[in-house]
Every structure is written in C-alpha cells, then in structure tokens.
Length: 212
Image (cartoon, rainbow, N blue to C red):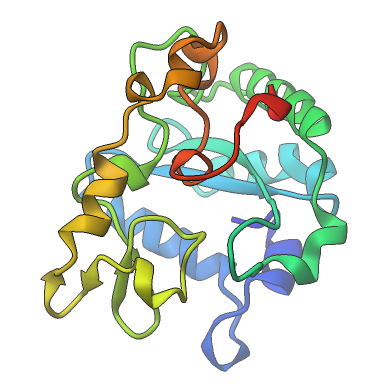
C-alpha cells in the first residue's frame, strides 16, 4: 500500500485508471483463509509518512488486525531502469526512514498489532522474497523476476508464468546468495543487524559500507 486510501489511489493507479486501494483490501480478505501468512508492506514517502497511524487504524476497521502483519518499506530510486525517478523528490533519506521504521513499529505494537518478523533480535539471514524458492514478481507480459528492481530487464528474467523457470543461472544468483560467502559481510560487525541488507545491492555491486 502507498498510504491511506486517498494517497494510495493517487499513486497506484490500475488498468483503465481504476482505483486500487479497495481492491487490494478485498483481495487480502479473500486470501486470509488460503495463505498461511500475509504481510502488508506500506511504502513510505514524504506524502504519507504523517498518515501511517491513520492507515493502521483503517486496516483494523477492515478486520485485519491479528490476521495480517504490517511493515514499512523505504522508496528508493534504484535499479538500472530508474523506474522511480519521477518520484525521487518524494523519497525520504535513510536516517529519517530509520526513525520512521522504529516509531511505526512502536505505534503498531501500542495499537495491538504484532511487530513485523524482521525486528532484531532474529534468527534468520532472510529478509526478502527474492531469496525464497517460490516467490516471484510477475510482469504484465507474464515474465518472472526474482526482484522488482530489474522489472523490464529481459536479461534478468528467470522465466515466464506460462513456461515456469527457464533460466536457472539467474534464479540461483538470487536464491543461492549468502552473506557468509561475502568477505565484506563476514567481517562486518553489524551483519547480525542488517542480514546483508538488500540482495540486489550486494550481487555484483558496490560496497554497502557507506550506508552503514
């Protein structure tokens, strides 16, 4: 979700310019009895950061408290295609997001929600669906990606929804990654806290030390 209904429907527009907030909530309700667990990511930017408490209250009014978990995600203009460049001015800085992350979880707990599973201390190196065997991003043409950042990059796709996985080289790049195979990560004293951060950033890309 991109915020409360009013904010979300201005930014996440469906086919035929349809609003999507109510449809997402409807689909979540239908999925509760089918899926073992559901996590709602709230994308945080300058437009909605002050409305997070209102959104959590709305989700409770929809009967979702105790049935789903919520967490906040930072919006960043990353990726070769720079798909978020049109909203770069709305992105919040790392330090401010860190403060928002902490305050959001405190607020959610006070309202009776379960904290998200990534709060430390934790017993997993896993953060992202890109590392999970059966998690994929489905593009409009049916192509499968492991991460939403390279969406649109054909050379990064792992397959197609009709044919299944066809590129095990690309697939294994994601699900086979471990921070324990990375010298920088192994020597980093905050590895237990960040779990190597984002796999996209770590696979063949620059050091993450400037973000630590």
